[in-house]
Image (cartoon, rainbow, N blue to C red):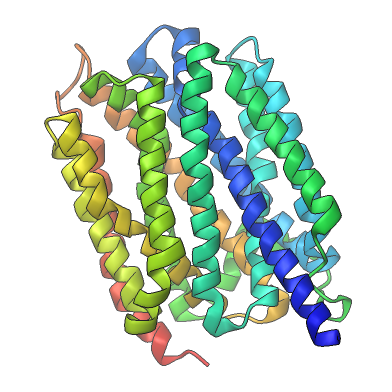
Length: 411
């Protein structure tokens, strides 16, 4: 009976993480097709909107950098459940704020709050590390990635459709989904971290710079953290300039962009939910990660060079293999720290990703603004994509070098 009860609680926990991940990403994805256009309405310029959208994403990432290690350490001290529930409730309230925003300042405040509340993704990964044996984590993280992708399919698609009706409607829908996530977790989510395995809260570990010291505790962790940084730096290309680029170069509107982002999500869901398990079983975590990064670089380069919309869409097929990288990277890293440090590790990881999230949108937004329009320094609209491909290729090389060393030192 105890075994059956444990199995039931574990299934309920994994189910909540998967459902809440999907709902949270739906809520985030809903606003992707409309937020840059809303900014453009406020400022009246496509090029300026690219810079400001990058700045807004950087603000969001900056708050993640600050909040992630704090939230991760709080979950190591007080448990995962209260952190996850409070974050869902806070995110719902934030979308209400953005739905009512009368100007750019309100939107900026909303992005700051969203950066704090979405930092709970670190706790979700720590939760899974609590309840999953090390050898099965790549597959479980793949399922979570698939749930993220499923949300990313529905989110932009729904946001594009709602955005055709009103640019504010997607924010109200996102608020409703955040509230549903909170209510769902309130009734079904058990705690995963026993009291005897909790760690006392310390500002030395919880501040973003102190949390990064954990990544220096093993040489291979530092190298994998570098891969994590480069991966996220390249990925923020999509949130920074994708919507504006698609409208500028191919004339696509909110509904078309939403449908295309849904296609990206379907590919990613297939990779992380179905393909990653068999590939890892055959090749191992490290080679699978490198393979995903390499194909991602090829795909992004082809997207930047595509002269037509159809070729741009075709380039997303090799780019879809990028989805193999994240779950395997997570698996490699979680096997290097103890159970009581999983929250701290995920907080440190998210801090690294957040540094990339601060710098990358500013970089790609700036690149986009000087490569399009009549005042462009160089008229090469796909330049941001080509630079992102170079960054991802560098991640593949670093991952190839580091993952072999990590594999030799795995317990």
